[in-house]
Amino acid sequence: MSGSKTGKVIISCAITGAIHTPTMSDALPFTPEQIAQSAIEAAQAGAAILHLHARDPKDGRPTSDPAVFYEFLPVIKQATDAVVNITTGGSLTMSVESRLQTAVQASPEMCSLNMGTMNFALHPLADRYKTWKYDWEEDYLRKSDDYIFRNTFRDIALIARTLGGEHGTKFEHECYDVGHLYNMAHCVDAGLFKPPFFIQLIFGILGGIGPEVRNLLFMKETADKLFGADYQWSVLGAGRAQIPFATQATMMGGNVRVGLEDNLYISRGKLAASNAEEVTKIRKIVEELGYQIATPAEARATLGLKGGDKVKF
Ligand code: KMH
Ligand code: ZN
Image (cartoon, rainbow, N blue to C red):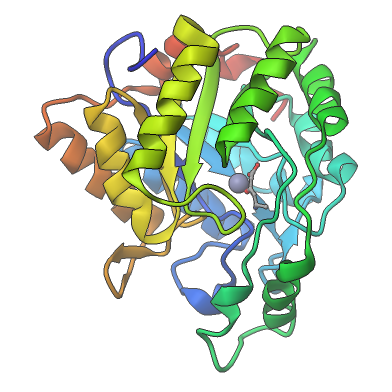
């Protein structure tokens, strides 16, 4: 089903992630204060959903430690009405159990859920930098040519049953390739997820489907065939695909994801100054195309979320 119930475009912003490292951009937030501030500014710029990872404040290394998340979750919640979406993807070096621990404590309205095991390669990024701010960065990137981003059917079922039950958490189903849509359909048939599903179609991650518009059309057609009117969709283009794919998705009636987790550049060769700058850019395009952006309340209505008052942070 294309377009949200309100016909408005839901902007998600992915604040810091676990792909990029501090050397790559001074704008990449990694302390709890920076993550909170960047998320609040992104919400003020128009992001209705904030996708959040945590990082060690000492050196920006990805962490799944709930204590670090809890240094910024309440701050964000008090300052904005945006939907908080906590990652269960974490980083490539984390176990599924560790990736889940914060969401189990925080009981968020939304979590990401990755719909298939895959290569998730970051190693080509390492060749772009000669010196590093922190000693973990280069190793983390270069070793990713041998990492497996683990999301077996058993892992997916564990996350679905742990968070989908009494927590009432809904999922941003992250689909990096067409097979992940069939994985999703299998899980729906197994009763793991109830509509409306929120499916994030992802293009341009090395290990997933390539950033070509024909692939977007193919993934969208496949999702329509598998899920009919039961799903809402969004598009995440990694790196330089971010804005072109978000623009294409908008024209097709979809929703969009931007943010420094996925792309550090605001234009060719120019680093984005902030997450808010990326949100502002896509918001302008959405509105120039004659669409309106969704408020957090409209996003909650479209996606069937439990409400910000039901979370535990
Ligand atoms: N950081 C990547 C391994 C998610 O948030 O669920 C994948 C990721 C997905 O960020
Ligand atoms: Zn993420």
